[in-house]
Length: 126
Image 1 (spheres, rainbow, N blue to C red):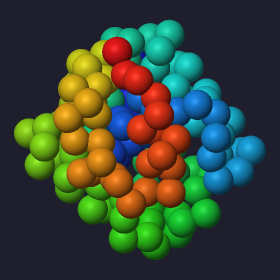
Image 2 (image 1 turned 45 degrees about the vertical axis):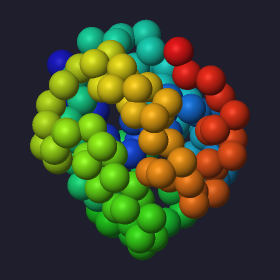
Image 3 (image 1 turned 180 degrees about the vertical axis):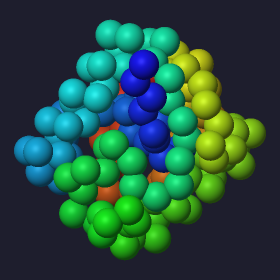
Image 4 (image 1 turned 30 degrees about the horizontal axis):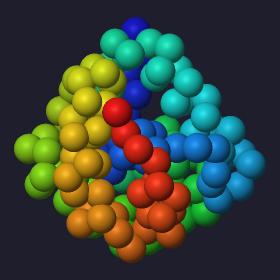
């Protein structure tokens, strides 16, 4: 059984992903993971700190850490607003539902200074 390790804020990123990213390999990886989760909504995920499966082609990744301070801040905000914790395991459809509610209420507060914010804010989440 596959378990995807995800940074908490990546739940928001996956929710709003429209095929744009840092590079073609980054976007292809994100698209592949998003498609897998959409096809199998009962896929297990584990919330993690540091680099995860979506970070594979990120230019800010250095080993298992991110050299940018923003993702850690976004993760912290998601955890604060959602009541979730690092190492929490749940299925994608439940995490997605929580992230959809969080996005409708707190997207600007959590990640308003992200370079992708305006793209994400333009997408209506059901």
